[in-house]
Each structure stands twice: as structure tokens, then as C-alpha cells.
Amino acid sequence: MKKLWNGLSQNSRLGYIAHLQSGAEWDEAEFATVGSRFVERMMDRYDEYGVFPPAQSSILEIGCGVGRYCRPLASRFKVVLGFDISAEMIAQASDRCADLDNVQFQLNDGSSLANQPDESVEYCLCAGVFQHITHLDVIESYLHEALRVLVPGGLFLFQFEANRTEAIGRDQFGAKITADFLDTALQQDRYAIRECSQDPRDPVQNLVIVLEKGDGSKPPKSRRSFRDAPMIERGWISGIYDGIKTPTAMHRRLAAEPVPMTFYDRADA
View 1 (cartoon, rainbow, N blue to C red):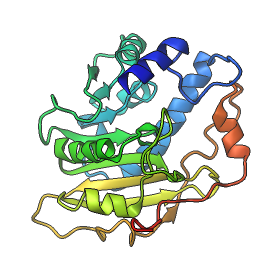
View 2 (cartoon, rainbow, N blue to C red):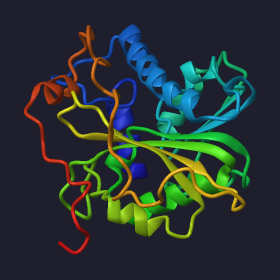
View 3 (spheres, helix red, strand yellow):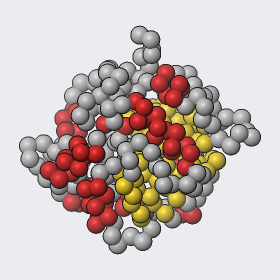
View 4 (cartoon, one colour):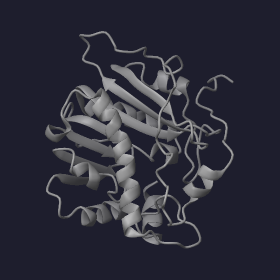
């Protein structure tokens, strides 16, 4: 993965984000706009479920890339920590956020947050990343790590494309994440499912999940099973690319017919 993403980052300005079409390059303002719009969607969830004031809290992003989310997050959080497997992307992110004193970046090993202490951040984020990870054991490791570094009551928001069909992915096409996989992977962790949502205007089938880390002394605020958790309708990607002229694959995918959701496929099917 490290070789793949270092190479993609070198070959495409702004880190090969959103699969630019026909040799196009991002317009800088549009690139920032897309990032800020996604951060607004994230903040809606953090503001609704969070118990820690963001301005007094730290947030850690898994797979920060070139820092597109870190920059707008820096105006909302006291500290922003960005982790990524690609040294090329970390270098770009550091340049992009060089004027921000509250943003820090760290190169990681591609499956853990090894240098981050236990219970050290109030919020954690992983968006646009799991859909590119080809092996479920790596995704499971990141899930455990996110809950490890959160303080009790902290929130972990993660997003992925719930349309995969293969247990092992290839290149940038990630492994299939299902409710059964999440239930099994996290059976030893302490958490409550605060949200499991899908954008009704999204044919790609992006899912957004928000977990609250438990402290062992209180009953969970919702059922633990992802298969049984209510799937609510809530905006995520619809509207994000409105007015964006830079040609990306997301324009095409959002205009296409809906693909089947595979999140509820049975593990033994």
C-alpha cells in the first residue's frame, strides 16, 4: 500500500484524490471547497453526539492524505493529528498546513497508530480510506486502534463504500465490509453505535458510522450489533460536488444508476 500511494501521489497533483479524469488537475479553490463541505457533514455528527467541546479537544485523522480535511478541522479543534502511510502525502500535507500551529502529521505503518498514547484524543476520523484498503485485517486493526486512542465518551466517525463484492480487494479497490464483519471484529471492544447512515441520494452506497467509546461503567446508548442497528437516511455525499467543475470520477458515479449495497450480506453466504 505504501508503494501504491506514494506512486499515485507523485503522479497526480494533490494526491490522486477523487480520481481525476482525462489528465485533469484540481482547481485549488475547488479542492478546498470539497474538503470543507465534507468537514461540515462530519461536524454535524460531532456536534450532535459529542460531549467534548471541539475547540477544547483533539481529533485524529486516519489516512489524512494531503491534509484536505485537516485544514478546515484546524479552525474547529484545539489539536489536529494526521496519520498516513504515504511519505509523499505527509510532505504535501505539511506544506499545505505549514501556517497552522495546531496541526501535526505523522507517518504510520499502514495498520496502526503505534506512537499515539491510549485515551489521548476526544475525536477520531477515517473517511475515504477504508474503501481503498484491500485486507480486512488491516481495517480491523485500525478500528481497534481508533477505539484505543479515544478517551471514554469520545467519538469515532468512519465512512466506506458498502458496495464491494470481494473479501480481498485489489489495488485501490478495497475489501468488502459487512455488518457481520464489524460485529465480529469489534466484539471485544467497548462502544455504542450512535449512527449508521446512508445518504438516500447516493447511488454509490457510502455508509457513515459513528461509534462512542464506552467506559465499562454505563450501559450502551444503542444496540451493539451492526446488523440490528437502525440504518437512517442522512446526507453525506449528495451536494458535495455541486458546482465543482474539476472533472472527477465522483461526478460520473453520482450520476450513474445505484449499485447494490452489500453491507448486510451474510458472512456465510
